[in-house]
Amino acid sequence: PDGETLREQSSRCMNCGVPFCHAVGCPLGNPVPDVHEALFRGDEREALNLILQTNNFPEFTGRLCPAMCEAACVNAGGVEETSPVTVRQIELALAEKGWSEGWIQPSPPEAETGKRVAVIGSGPAGLAAAQQLRRAGHAVTVFEKDDELGGILRYGIPDFKLEKSILDRRLNILKQEGILFVAGTDVGAALPVKKLRADFSAVCLTGGSRQPRDLAIPGRELRGVYFAMEFLTQSNLRLAGKNVSTLEAIDVCGKKVVVIGGGDTGADCVGVSLRQGAASVAQIEVMPKPPDCRTEDFPWPRYPLILRTSTSHEEGGQRDWAILTKRFSGENNCLKKLECVRVEFVPQEKKSCALMREIAGSTFDIEVDVAIIAVGFLHPEHGTLLDTLGVAFDQRGNVQTDERYMSSVPGVFAAGDLRRGQSLIVWAIREGRCAAHHIDAYIAGGRSSLPVL
Image (cartoon, rainbow, N blue to C red; front, side):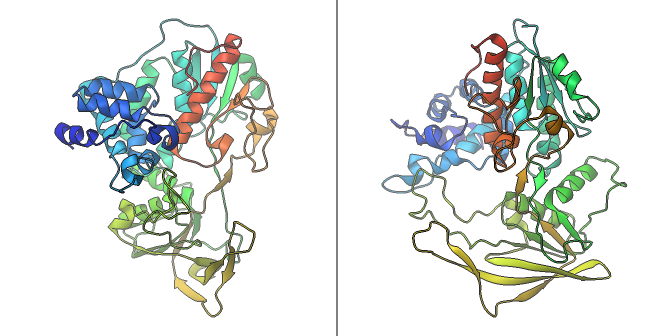
């Protein structure tokens, strides 16, 4: 959109007495009304600066965030419901204007503290923590297990949602600010934990939630059944010109594809399958089809459970709901069909959760060559690093921390999906910022120069 269109859109912001957009809707607390006021006055640079006070990477969130702020907008849920202010589009436009005009520049610290901090993982939580800690004057080293930086931004998000050049230009800024990046290093294996603790004043774990939730049903071992991240990562590797000969090839060109799981990751798999030239693509979900509009179960300003259609869905494929996959069937160890049944959810007295029940006589088969499991993630990978550090886990298997984001091991902090479970990029950035504040306070003896958020 052009500048005048953005200015007109910003004029719809009501500068509410209680701005739910950032008090309720935004995990980062972006000062949305102030941003829109500056934009309406024609001061785009000031509007961007206001965003950057709370959001390290608006070029990422402007593309990937589901915009809870818009769901909480008074215009979207007031006395007479209308459309919300297009907060995310304004954020993205301002961010891109900042890059094109050269407003976004490296900002190294004015003074060095002489303290060193290690950040393990270069996804959005790790990058946010690293930038905040560097702003406090600490020497920050970010370790990444993969061969290139970015974590899920690099290998989990398809290019049609986030071009890797967008990621690389931000990484270049972070490098110019003095952050040291070390890719291709499995901390705990290639770099012993003992040396890590000896070399750094504090450690921040931001490795993400990489353990996928599986479908433990008959036929799971058949060729043609893959996890979503196996599929998405390999696709990103190929697009980047990487050698994937050591991996089992996942190419869906000319094949019948079924994506099991109705979330955003599943939608990404739909989009990639269509781009690879799949013969057909279907996405199935065990939960009922969401309503088209907000219901009383999700009153404004809560983020509503409604039917959401992504660009991947608009490009093709079919979707269906309330389907339980019972078995993978095949021939010669290769997948040929899914055996499914339709389900219904029956309310239970005195219980908040409905009981899922198979509908008698509703069994059916789906012909398929490739099934992609996209039903979420369980917890971070438990292995050499976490085991050797000796950190405690919560009931879900995430790294347990106190209110300071510190794990059970003094000086070892955690943030992002690794700490709170699979979530959104905006939450990952918040987690990284919060952890950085507490790490800075730990190093500085109780006080931090960084904002809490």
